[in-house]
Length: 215
Image (cartoon, rainbow, N blue to C red; front, side, top):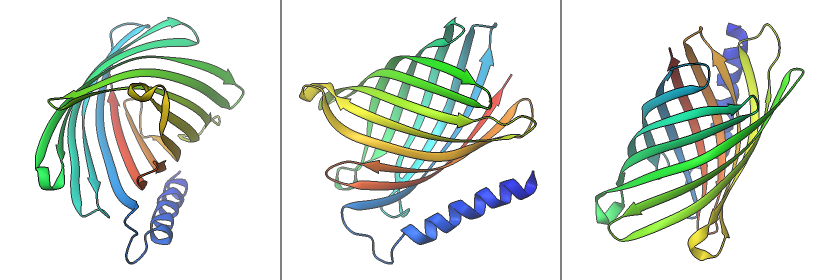
């Protein structure tokens, strides 16, 4: 198991070294996203969660944002989960300094379980607001995870698209993500990933780590 983890970490660092140029182009950014989440199941269907997030930008050199979030999910059917959440973002906007914004989201995730595989489709509506503007998005994500028996590692790949509802369902952002979860124990889990985010104005390479504790 340790060899598998070391191999995954080595792959992420090799990808980082291969993709970060000496002087990145102005339309390409690199950053690290980290998140810590705590979740609690009230019963077999209803669960609550909360956590903190930290992101960097500008070739890892500047803080992008701090964030706190809370959420809830309800398993309406064996294959369908409903979700809702709230986020508070404190962002560094360069010349404008630190600015805050808020967000809520409503969504649903459908899952299909196959031998050693889990496929999912998530649809999420989100509303983000700050003093100067309101943004509405519909986020659609498809994900495939390999779930081998007798292994704590679960590799996955996902594709997510953002439709900007303010501009008549305009496709504003696409995210490609490749990673693996590692179940440390019954309560602790770590998710290591690489993500490429495409936007017309600027592309982003992200190396991420997420820790979660459930009870």
